[in-house]
Length: 155
Figure 1 (tube, rainbow, N blue to C red):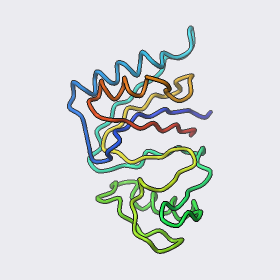
Figure 2 (figure 1 turned 180 degrees about the vertical axis):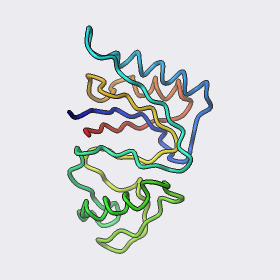
Figure 3 (figure 1 turned 120 degrees about the vertical axis):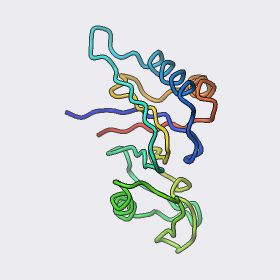
Figure 4 (figure 1 turned 60 degrees about the vertical axis):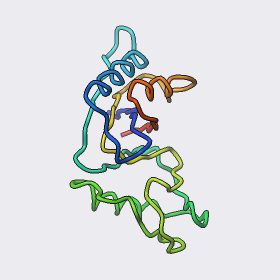
């Protein structure tokens, strides 16, 4: 069986909220994604990572573009890089892209299906909905006290 995970992460990969802000944002996420009536309850996981961790879109990732030259970046290069850092996370997001040899950051790559990097994450498992839209991301950002990004994974 596969799962869908809608994650809310800070726009700044290094930023983490205090406990009160995290609880407010998680409670709002639970209201916005209550699950299927008479179905499975949605599971909300709030995680403070010790180091920067990839929050990827799982099998939704179809391609990666270089923000410097516009070339397509092999997803195997990215997957190998993520595998190396899976256990311990990232101390820096700086990288040299294989297409043009330029210096950029992993969070600046152009992911077809958003991916992100964070030290804090609210993961909503099987939310029975798509992306947060309209005013919902702004409300989550307000509850958290910091701009947010969304990542939708199919795993």
